[in-house]
Image 1 (cartoon, rainbow, N blue to C red):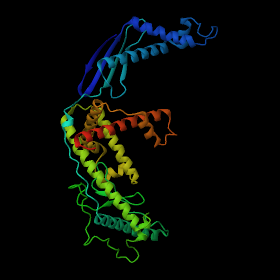
Image 2 (cartoon, helix red, strand yellow):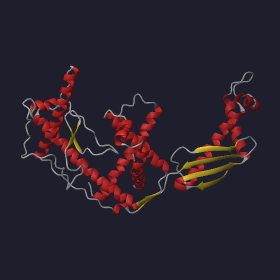
Image 3 (tube, rainbow, N blue to C red):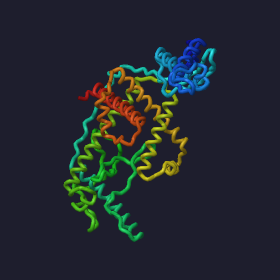
Length: 405
C-alpha cells in the first residue's frame, strides 16, 4: 500500500491510497472463501461449492464491494493511527478503480481535529468573590415583585374569564420571557413555589460587588400591602402560589435568591476563566465545528421559544432579523464557544481526567431510557461521557486557578 496526504485550509485532509493488484486479489479471494463457507447452493453440500459457482451465485459486484470495504477499513485505520489523524466526522470515501486483477485505489477526504496550543494555564489566577448574604429586605422586595406579577396576571385572567363566561385559575403567575441567546434583556429571576420563574426588577443583570442588584425600593423593609381589599400579601396569597403560608414563602424566596446569587458568582468566575483561557490558547477552528455550534445554539433557542409557546419564525419577525442574519450575528460567539471547548478538552487530556463507569451509570439512572433503541442508548452514553469529562475538567481548572477547595 502507498498513500499520499494533502492538507488544505482549516484542517481539510485528502488521502490518496493505492493498493497493488496482488493485495486486492488476495482480499477478494478471502471474501469469496467466506461467502463459499456459508453458501447454500442446490446440487452442492453447504460450503463445498466451487469458487466459480459461488462467485456466480453471490454476484461478482457484491464480492468486489466487500473486498473494497475490507481494504478501505484496514488501510485507512492504519494510516490514521500512523499519522495521528482524528477525523471530526465520518470521512468521505471515493473509489477511483475497482476490478479484480487490477490495482485498487481510493481517496479519503475529511476535516481533522485541530491541534490546540496552550500556554501555562496553571499560572492563570481568577478570584472568586463571596456572595452577599441575602437579607430580609431582599426577601421582602422579591416577594413584592412576585405579588405584583401575580396580581397583574390575576386581573388579566379574571377579565378574560368574564369575557368568555368561564372561570380560570387566577393564581397563575404572570407569564414572563426568560433571557435566551440572542434575545434582549429580562434580568434576574427567582423560582416561586410552583417552579415558575419570576423576574426581579433590577438596575443590572450582573452581580456587583458580590451582592444582589437592587430591586424596586420601598420606604421600609416591610412588604407593602396591596391597595386592594381583596388582594394582599398574606397567607392566602402565599397559598395561592403554592406555599404553605407566608412564612414558608419567605423561606422559599430566600433559598431561591441565595441560589441565584451563588449561580451569578459562579457564572462570573467561569466567564473570567474562559476569557483568560482563550487568551493563552491558539487553535485554527474548522468551519464544520463552527456550524455545528451554531446549530446547537439555534436548537437551544428554538427549545426555549417552544417552552414559551412561540415559534422561531415569529420570534425572528419580532426581532426583525432573518435566519441567515441571526447565524451571522452569533458566529463570533460560536467561534468563542468552540475554542473554549477545544482548550478545555486538551487540558482534560493533559491532566488525564477520567470518566468512570460508575459515574456514567449514575447519570444514566436519572434518565428514562426504556423507550430508547440500543443505538440511541449508546449515543446517550457517549454524550454523558463528554458532559462528565467537561464538568470534571472545569472543576479541576477552577481548583487550580481560583484556589477553590
